[in-house]
Amino acid sequence: MRQLKITKSITNRESASLDKYLQEIGRKDLITVDEEVELAQKIKQGDQAALDKLVSANLRFVVSVAKQYQNQGLSLPDLIDEGNLGLIKAAQKFDETRGFKFISYAVWWIRQSILQALAEQSRIVRLPLNQVGSLNKIGKALQRFEQENERRPSPAELAEQLDVPVEKIADTMKVSGRHVSVDAPFVDGEDNSLLDVLPNEDSPMADSSLTQESLSKEVNRALEQLNPRERDILKMFFGIGCQEMTLEEIGAKFDLTRERVRQIKEKAIRRLKGQKSKLLKSYLG
Image (cartoon, rainbow, N blue to C red; front, top):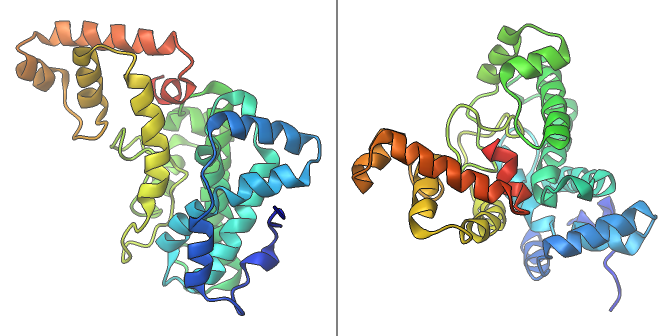
């Protein structure tokens, strides 16, 4: 079969309707983590076909991100175009040895590309250019920290890495508006990722389930290694598929003391860390 060539020109839908484009990318098969690793290795060797395949399999996720930035000065097709360019950059830079799923790495590059286009081409941007720049710098530092340490940095660690006051990190996060994390179904709260900045609060989070489903399957697969009680306690504590609960609340549900719940939780986390579930380890700490 002839390999689809992924360049900016293929996402120019002046001659093909957006609906047709969405149908086309919706028919692309998702690839496994093992396939991602194999493709990334080939990309490092200059294999264009591998690059095309990795990008093609993830084009639908770009649409999910692009829809969050509608009504800010660029049309949806233009937003998708810019997001696809970010996806290509991510595929070229992806380090498969870090243990992260490709889309959890690529989403920052997709957003950065869209934000840059909004800053350069549109006057309807809710943040001044200097603050968009600050957000990009923070996002880059966060992504680099996650890749190197396989966990999220604290605001203080980001501030130290960027050599700026921690208050500036907090202020920049505040002006960015509501954050919607790729990991939102798993861990809600103020520690959500800075990968998600400047969302359009007036538009629904359409199709975000595509990204969430991809990550959710991996997490649930990892949790299957636990016994039912351990699995339930972890899900409740981290808010996986439900509202986060405190140790006391979980204890009341199982008729256990707070300390006993903590012991079960810690034991479950150790079991997961002993396995090859690097995705889960990246946010279990």
